[in-house]
Image 1 (cartoon, rainbow, N blue to C red):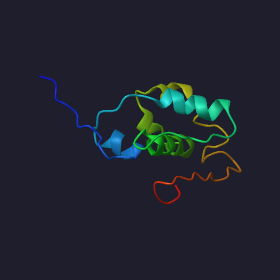
Image 2 (cartoon, helix red, strand yellow):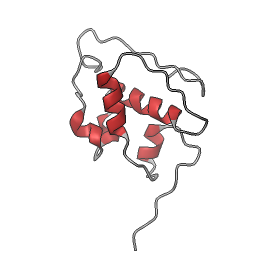
Image 3 (cartoon, helix red, strand yellow):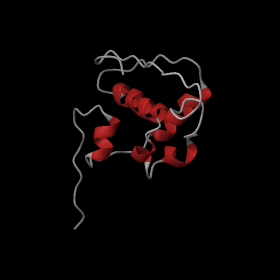
Image 4 (cartoon, rainbow, N blue to C red):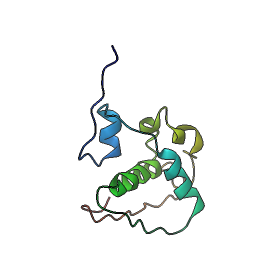
Length: 104
C-alpha cells in the first residue's frame, strides 16, 4: 500500500513542505515564468490562495536552493548559475515583501 502524504494545511514555507514530505502539486513552472517574463507584479488574490507560498517559492529559486526543486519543473528550467545566484560575481541580495509576516 502506498503511504499517504500529509496535507500542508497552514504551512507557508516551501522548504518545510518539500523537506517534511508534505503533499505538493508542482507549480514551480509558474514561478519560473513569473521570474523570467515580467518586471513588477502585484499579487492580489483572496485569503488562503497561496500567495505567501508562491513568494516563498520565488525566494528559494533566487536563493539557489536547487535541492528543494529536485524532480520539479524548475530543476531543469531555471538558470541556477544566473546573475541572481549567490555564486555570481557581484550578486546583490533581493528583497521580497509579504503582508503575512516579516520580510523574507
